Length: 399
Image 1 (tube, rainbow, N blue to C red):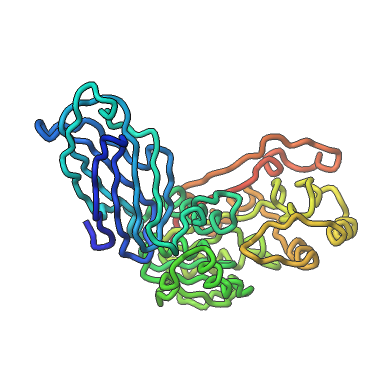
Image 2 (cartoon, one colour):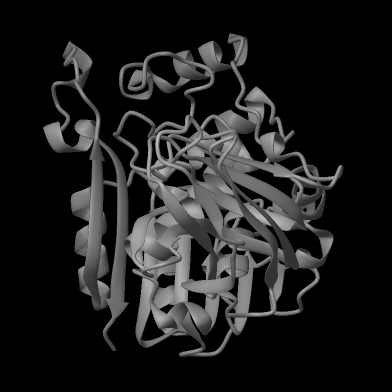
């Protein structure tokens, strides 16, 4: 157990058919909270039931420092004298850690009474005991329609769990090339606590991160760690020595490097240690999100059907349905510039370039779209290129 949390109260309420508990989180923020409840027969020591908050489908992605109250229901009949053993778990440095545990006082339940309990949970309830924490406003309660959730929660988990399998290298030195607003970097940094984390992006959009974090209830001290910093460098000239980083990340950035990304891949290979890990999620130009103009057009392949001047005219005349990128809205003219700078990345071409540089693929995930309707303008394009929506890849740097 750690000094990051404590359970202050656990009780079995047979009359209301529930187990209740109160706990306090002492760290600024804790991730992937889980509560384990075991119901034990006091006389025999036999475990009657055991269940976890996560088994009910509740995903408590993170909670800030504060006091909380939780309860889980009990139903059925099980006469006897019982005690609830409660354990509070969270992810710390990327690994599940037992934060605290406590037992309830014994509770006697008589046979045949309506309040008798079998101790299995149909539902959980969690609420904050502090006015400044509104659980409904936290990103993991808002889901994939929320920009902060998709970057701070979803993207960080994809990198850490799915593509890098909680590698111990995530505790070393990490570089993010093309970090954008820095939300994913903050999510990875806080979960993994690396030795050093540097995000680079010439756009300097990361300057908004403190305000975005504040609006999304991330404690201010989480951004005051000197191990996390952002710098306005270009991926084609990374100003760090050879073999400096254990992990290099690139989420949705390589397609935006004006003039091509080959130099950036070479720079990544240079600064990444031998047997270090690369994670890439490049935008695929011919896929259904490849033009990055989905807020302006319903047709995902319109950029392959129209000449440039006609596409530009329609873009500048459109009424976009903007995504709320945490309050950031660019002009149609900016979108057109970004479109003209896009690199036409394909899965086949990207794999060929990575292998030529000496990267050894470790994990690959492809997401396909449901149907591609081939119009005359699309006939010259590959099935695979049009139907592949997303590529996620991790690779070893074999020097």
